[in-house]
Image (tube, rainbow, N blue to C red; front, side):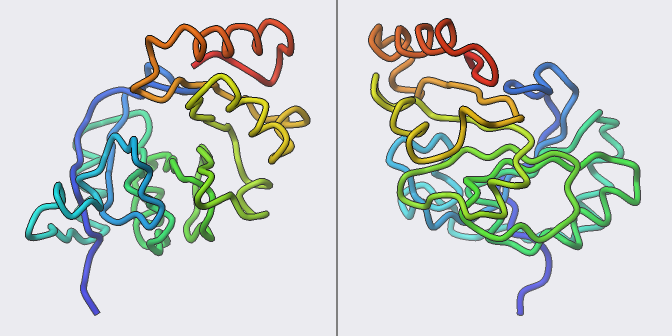
Length: 197
């Protein structure tokens, strides 16, 4: 068994999305993702053409120490798909340093670890499991075309959600007027919990 977590990158910046927008954040991006979205913005975590030859493995306490020294307001564990890893050790080490642990996941895999905040960004090829539906603190819906929002609302109980539902255009669609108009119209017509991302 290999020791440590497979780390693609870690860096101190600020959260660019969701409720915690603008907060000082230390990001830990882990390798591995069985979902493999064609428009993935972190393909280096899984794609054979982008993944490095050697994957750096770092122990939980070393990652937590590095995060602690950065003095962030939150620590965001992301990927790839971070929930394919047992996050108990990492979240324990973060919490023992009073660092709030946030997770960004597609929601298709059991979550192992104590998290302070869970963002679920569902994907069609790996729909969220019941646990994720119950534990989501916020949703991030990737709007691929002008029909995406309606399709996700039929597939998931988003209209009844107590958690905010962020509508983000898929990165290659950020200038597509139909996609942007669908987000604009949906937020104006439906209001909470929907928000433009």
